[in-house]
Structures are given as C-alpha cells and as structure tokens.
Length: 74
Image (cartoon, rainbow, N blue to C red):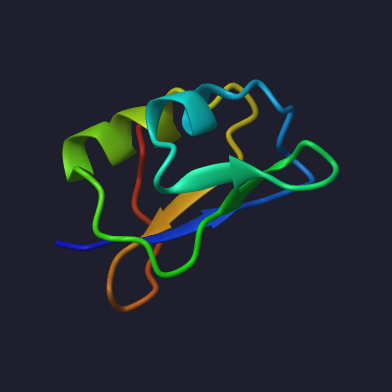
C-alpha cells in the first residue's frame, strides 16, 4: 500500500525527526517547517508509519490511495 503524505504546518514544531529519519521524503522549508518532497520514490512503509506516529507535533498525516486518513495509534 502506498500512502499520501501530508504535513500540517500549523502543527509542525520543527523537531527535525522526520527530516533526519526520512530525508528523501521530508525537508525543511524557509521557515524551518517540515514539508513533503514531491515526486520522490516510495519510502519504506514501516519507517514512514513510525516517523508519522512519533511526530511530536502530530503534524504528519498519512492517507490511503482513496484519501482516507490512516489511524496512527499515537
């Protein structure tokens, strides 16, 4: 299953965990808030789920191919 990844910038606290753990998926913008790198290859799904669950600001949202949010059990 591939996921649609979104970062809610209003919730991002710039911890950098997502950028450090998945630098091919996340990067910082000019405001030092995480954003998703568009067009990158499919990340390891297990790692992506872990990074989303461990986001301290709960700013990472994962959706299935139909756009339905994935329950992350944070």
